[in-house]
Length: 442
Image 1: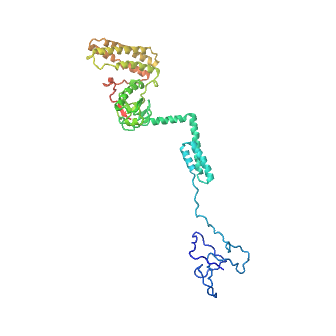
Image 2: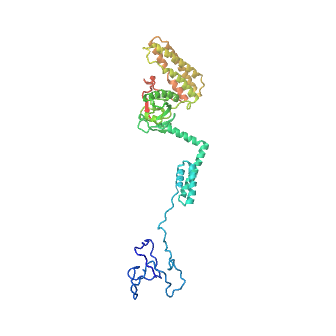
Image 3: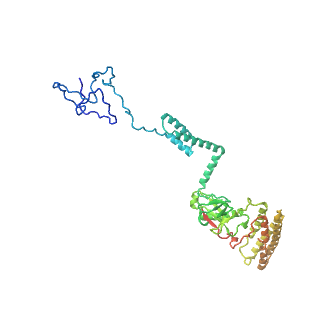
């Protein structure tokens, strides 16, 4: 006796499951709809139960059809065995394996060369995890480990040779000097702007042998935590730069009328960034002009004869620069006293130059200069003894005729020094040079 299937809706068929092959032993469906209940067969008595539906769940297997051999395997429900369909139970696309996060971190540290030891350890850990978990990122892990190994070797070498200390010191100097021009004594530079009189924010360092806008002859470092003010900075620059100028250019004949002194000073803004340096420079008096060649003439560039000659002449010039502001007709006594000092200095340096051993080329020219200096000393002494203004000026003019005269030029030429006498303007005696010097903000 067959048991009909339960009434009600049947479970939906899997839309992704391909159609099952027709069971060769199942009876063919009868009628227009497979599985619909059929009426009693012809000739069957009335009231007999209807035939079971012929659907995908056939009734109990009644044995093979006539003529089929016995012993055929049966399925779990008495019917013939069913076989899986190809592709059943698999997704249509495979999902890729994830990338190992530790491998990414190892590669980043290796590229940046930051904490190389950590990057090397992370690379090794990433390789172990990738092999165990089947993740991707093996190339990144290897690359990070290799780069970190190179970085670690570099750090070890720098520590062994002191390179790391030098790098750190350079970093600190750069951080503390933010906002400065980083110019040193003896360097020459060009200003990107059209003129040198404008504020200077940046410079291009160039060789002093060719044309350039300016040459650094000294620097002054300011102290204190707060900005001292524009006036204070300017006063310090004028005082210190004039002193540094004499030490850098011991030969005043190099400072022609085309050369003037300037100074680059900090501003309130650059001070806040760590700028504490005043830079003293030589530049052309013409704001669009340039300089050619270095103006440096100190113990690093002069030979023994040149140095001795310039020091002797500087001692005489120092007294001459102290000439009283008052004219002789206004204060004769003050001028007579100064004339006596000028004569003493001139005579002393004439004796020093005469006692020095000179090269063959400079021996006679220097001897001629010494003779003129002795004559000048006598004239200064007569001016000091003058009892009236006219007599004073007579000997005053005779003494000055020897200053920077022909014998001085000849001696300088023999010693390889500058031979163009400086031009003394009206503003020279008060220490202002050509009167065009000034400060520039950095």
